[in-house]
Image (tube, rainbow, N blue to C red; front, side, top):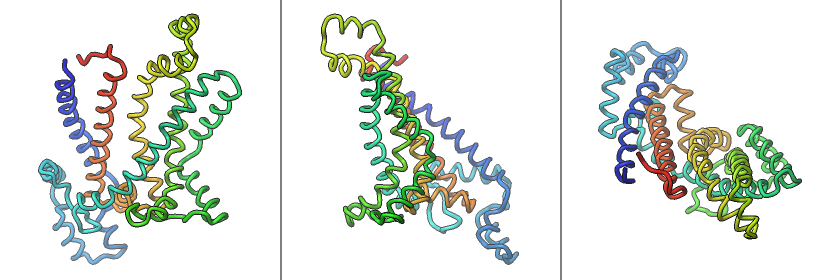
Amino acid sequence: MSMYRYTVRRLLQIIPVLLGVFTLTFVMMHALPGNPVRIYLGLNPSQELADELIRQYGFDRPLWQQYLDYLGRVLTGNLGESFLLKRPVADLMLERLGPTLTLMGLSYVIALPISLLLGVYAASRHNELGDHVSRFFGLAGLSTPNFWLGLMLIFLFAYELGWLPASGYVPFAQDPVESAKRLVMPVITLATAQTATLMRMTRSSMVEELSQDYVQTARAFGLPERRILLKHAFRNALLPLVTIIGLQLSFLLDGSVIAEKIFAIPGMGRLFFKGITKQDYGIIMGMTLSFALLFLVGVLLTDLAYAYIDPRIRYD
């Protein structure tokens, strides 16, 4: 099967998955206790006003009618309106896309090279001091919760030392220096767990490859160790790493919700958090579908990358 046909087939497979995510999210959202109208109006709302809002947003209709109506609007590209903010969900997401992509992109750009270098180094020093130190930092990074790390960074660098602002976001085009200062702690918070995970996977994969017979043969023929390490073993070790790198995208999305909340970054994660706490159905549905689509595209790109790394793979 050609790459083109495989790509088309995988894109078509995304559609039922998105429909499943849409249906599951819709059912779970309406199964939650509480009423968004009551949350929006407060503890003692006017009954007339509450009834008017319920009719206006169609909450008094049967659930299946609400489902079909919302599905029809989504199929036409309309993600609905935020009940809380009174604005189209698509506009709210586009406004917050820049900060989230900046945070996620910088975290990935920093985490990926550091984790690969540390993983290869640890594997090349297997069971030596460098390996033990790398494993210790990897375990510490994995064991540290994002929210705890973010709060500790604020306490140390903003409160105690006063080196960095505690929160907020400034676009890079507006003030590059201030933008960088406000992104340091959120990026470290988000990149730490990614670096630790990828480093440990790189090390494990490289250790396995370096124990293979072809590596011993290459050493017996006198090939330089650096060439064996980087040209032969590292390339073969990349295949499982690509899978993990693609799946890490979902963890970045999860982590961005926490980081944006802690550091008051006006991104999509913070919007999603606000939508969940206020039971804003439009925001929850729009954000869930967008995150699901982004994750599925990441998985698709991961699968396509296999062909470039291992030519033996055929798309049957």
